[in-house]
Image 1 (cartoon, rainbow, N blue to C red):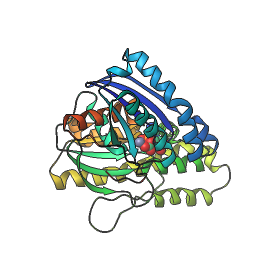
Image 2 (image 1 turned 120 degrees about the vertical axis):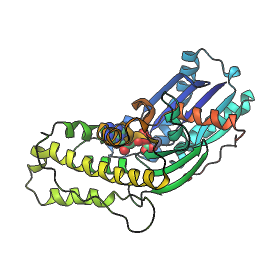
Image 3 (image 1 turned 30 degrees about the vertical axis):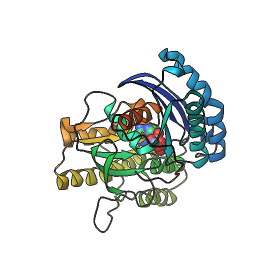
Image 4 (image 1 turned 60 degrees about the vertical axis):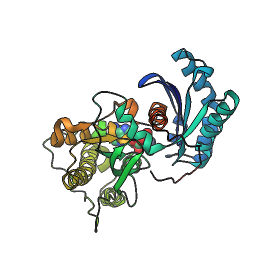
Length: 328
Ligand code: KG4
Ligand code: ZN
């Protein structure tokens, strides 16, 4: 089965072709322009998607040596994300669908991130726990099957990636700052005592996260120091902040695994590129932790095509329906 995936929910325009479970092409265009503004500007994102989506589509068809007529399905992200940005991908997908008589399905972006861990070996058996950590989301799910998830908890304020980006801004890094923070943290001498940034404990039931207090703690810490403090202590600040994020993610992941009795855990989403988080999970869960390769962690259309494939196999095709805040 040949599936065209389309992803335009935020600041990556991506189009991919999946040939059954094999990625035949997966092109990603990252809209660098947002770094000038310190974050994603929705109107600019929509316009940039319009300029790229058709060219990327032509490029992947060419790369995969597939014609539009040979496609069995189009899968497009329709939720959650920026409304205008989502509409560009949806409009393009529905135009192709109508014009060429190809069926089309809407896909939830988080459903796509979870599906990304099944594109490469080893694939976790169901049920597994998914820790979805991205710029817009931080959540834990029990995944019973494709399209069958139970939410265990999520962030009550900022997403982990958002915290990386906001702290990065305080430290003078360009948006998105996750990777720069990780690289800077690696420059910190291992024997330096970390700055004790607080790891939020959420009251009540469940496995919720909170990262806005951590960002404020970094801001407060910097505000009490002399001007040159940040420049000379950046690696230590980055490592201490990253460690606090790792601890928060680990606490909930370990509790969720213990309480559900499920030891298979998948780390997905852009923040899943982070080596310190991967290392901590690997150390605790050993072989039962699963990560997609970095190109499949950040936003990409191969994961959307994969979610579409699984919908098709289960007869769960649904018309795309714009839902900017759509939960899984
Ligand atoms: O999944 P994604 O591409 O987009 C959303 O759906 O949000 O995730 C982007 C996020 C950004 O916040 C970025 O800073 C973060 O992933 N990120 C990282 C790393 N690489 C990307 N965060 C921490 N460490 C990294 N190596
Ligand atoms: Zn994402």
